[in-house]
Length: 270
Image (tube, rainbow, N blue to C red):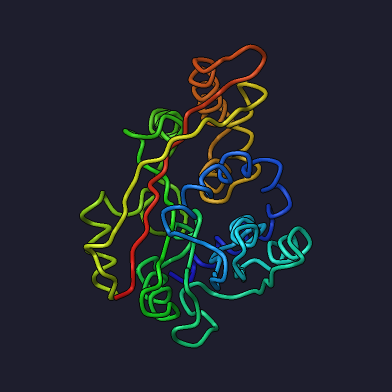
């Protein structure tokens, strides 16, 4: 667990400056449905956990909420504070939130849980810092059978990569296995499972070239980048060619429009 936490922290410190230009055009598209599912409105106090460049906090602020953000990367916190000066950001651990019980009306996490050694612990911390009746909303990537982008990356790696490499063990790439498992986990930490909203939301990620997704995974990611960095040049080239072939199926004019899908989840504190 400690090795994975160190791996993720060091990785996001290293690529923090690339997130906005590479990944934000897809991950930001999930923020409106996340805020809608969690019913974020003005006058609320909102915490953006794993805030990255601060987009969720910024979007909550645009709805009139008072928002704060927390991330384990000092580099990300600095970027967020610069982008959204009207919100407050700080370095911290989502699994040990530095806030008193019952502080927030909403806790939100946009694609943050998979970067933690113990996602369930982060859910328990979200429960603790929420006021009674508050909501926890989060997104996680859907598995390959529901997520064409994930399938093209997964298929290329399964077909061509050496998977017997030494990487720190983290949570499953596709956290939990569906609606009922999410419900059980959230109920275990205290949430009202009957209140859970669980939706599949799909977007299109527009990229300028067939090689863009491979380059993004290799140079601006962390977990997949770690696996790619440990491949031979021959295997790496085979993975790249397989991904590029898949991307070309989504050609639209001079660019490529790749479907991505995630689960949007929201649940209430009793």
